[in-house]
Length: 165
Image 1 (spheres, rainbow, N blue to C red):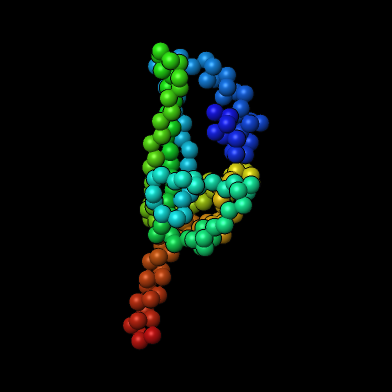
Image 2 (tube, rainbow, N blue to C red):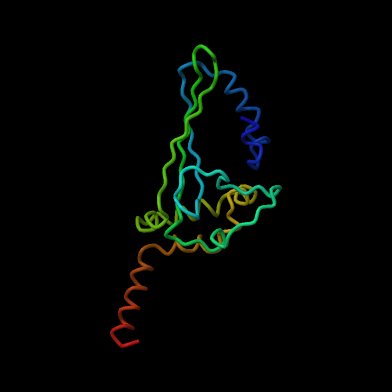
């Protein structure tokens, strides 16, 4: 578990030893569930070879889409992760079920402010790991505006069209 989470800021210091102890006490048939989330600003594909995280040591180059994403391709990715120890081998089985929700849907439902607050409240290193420094400037204000911003924009366009502009 430590190896998988080595790039996650704060994992080793805050959780490493307690996770090891917890796994050491697991009982076959006992299930552990946890949730994880990230923003995926470049489409809704479930399988990501490169993940949704930033690893500065890789010295990667990113497309403009990471900096100025098309909101119609931005998703909240939530993972329901379940772990269970197998009875004979004592191996720990890890299952992940991913849920993808368009940011537009979150915004339309009036939940954009809560999502933006969660993103903004992430510790700096965690926000960096989740790539907030790339998409944050463009993405964060948008869900806060809510669906009423679209209505105002549509009304303005209709008014201008009626005046022949």
